[in-house]
Amino acid sequence: MKGNKLGLSQAQLDAYWMPFTGNRQFKRDPRMMVAAQGSYYTDADGRKIFDGLSGLWTCGFGHNIEKINAAIAKQARTLDFSPSFQYGHKGAFELAERITQFMPEGLNRVFFCGSGSEATDTALKLARGYWRKLGRAGKTKLIGRAKGYHGVNFGGISVGGIGGNKAIFGESVAADHLPHTWLPENAFSRGLPLQGADRADELLELIALHDASNIAAVIVEPLAGSGGVFPPPVGYLQRLRKICDDHDILLIFDEVICAFGRMGANTGAEAFGVKPDMINIAKQLTNGAMPMGAVIVRQDIYDCFMATDAPDYAPEIPHGYTYSAHPLACAAGLASLEVLEDENMIQRVQAISPFFESAVHELGNCANVVDVRNYGLAAGLTLQAYPGEPLRRPFEVAMSMWEKGFYVRYGGDTLQLGLPFIVEQAEITSLVNALADSLAETA
Image (cartoon, rainbow, N blue to C red; front, side, top):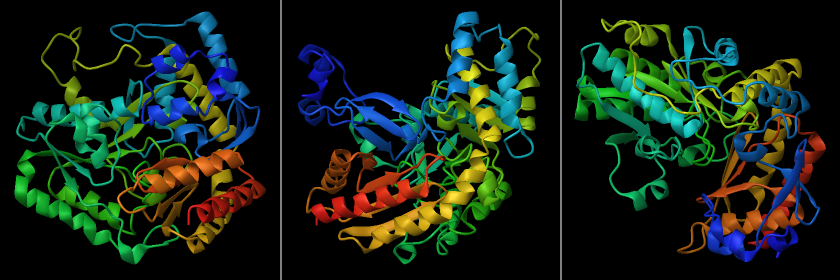
């Protein structure tokens, strides 16, 4: 057993309740990472494993980046922790201003948290609080989208549209959902699907049902990532933006996967030409080296909270986290954004994406591949399910890939690829060829 190769006892293996994992299967046959460098992990057997998901959509620059490591180490020796309630440290303000340089014009106020899940709950609370501050307290309804993923806190699973993530937990925050944009006529689309912009008009039906006076916000991923990688149809996000504008509804983009390069742009908002009222970020903000998330809002949303008759020493909003703007995370974020610019990471994504698109769509000829979708350095494959076992085939393909030396994401009926920005053409070819073989093994 690989766990025992690392000197782990069975008691140690049993003690850790792993997230989003089949714990019973894993602990019979653990898949252990022991090191990482560049685009590769090293497993407990000493094998090099190509990182086909950039960690968890986190490590686009590759692993073990010296500039980021050095920044974290220096910060740890200087100021390991600083309270974010009523006190501050220099790095938090520097990083906040730096982040705004990558955001659409007008989104210039940054609220830090510890993850994408916390960013979702923060944005939803800010949306409700904003309308209440404006004297429109009835605007509380939240609208997400089917197949959407917004983390696993109660707010996130409420607006999220992946049934398996919430069915076991019962009632959560009241929310409604737009339909997803995965349409049969768009199968095997390259880049943005041409059909489906009218799916945004379903928001008008929800407005008719709930009335705009009761709706606080719509939250969507510009490109839906963890639900299966679904790029937005041409014109879809523009239509959502207009409907929200026409009915005084805030539009939130969850860019935890999209922001800082993966779409070949600073943000998904930039890539797809639509400016939301808030943007959630995490993951690539620190290249995965430290946990961190944030919500970036319009100036007037921030100003609304500042416009209060309370004494100036009173908090304007009762919200925050112990680890908001953690000094080590801020150091990692500042260094990561330096790497993003200095190493021309966005240009690398733009340059390699056409080759990736062409290669990954070759898998459409493989048995049991129902659809292939892509944009930037993200792709999703939907696989034909075994009768009564929709999760099995992606798991089997991913395990076959692991044995071949490749880590890919499996979830639901999909395989997901999120390649490092530093990937080479030969590595893409090797990955795609291995996937073709693994898919053939499950035919």
